[in-house]
Length: 175
Image (cartoon, rainbow, N blue to C red; front, side, top):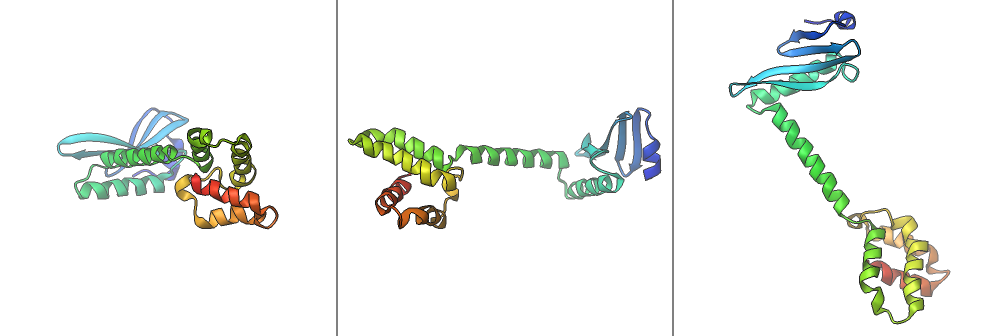
């Protein structure tokens, strides 16, 4: 078993066994990482557990223990990690596919703006959203905009300029 003091001294290229398949791989004095060697279904595999600069000996042993727990259940930890990474990537992709309030409002305007005959109303629609809605709602994904968000966005102008607030509320519903 490796000790913290031994690890500090290991600078020569190679793989150094700690316990139960956990290795410290030294590629250079400043390039050292943890590996777990295991076998599943007759297949030998090496799983990277992270850099020595990111994970000390105790943390590496903990990460190796988690991987061995999966192995005990017949689950390949590399396949599990890949599946989790794919799920995170898919979730991130879906999140970016959902438009922000500002993007949805601009799409709505591009699609329906020509239907307003009065050029002044067309201009007011965008300027009202730009002045009042975008600062509070513009960066939110449309699925995250709640009724309370809309109320808080309308409230400041409701008493001052009720006609604009009324149009603004209609604009918010349209988006």
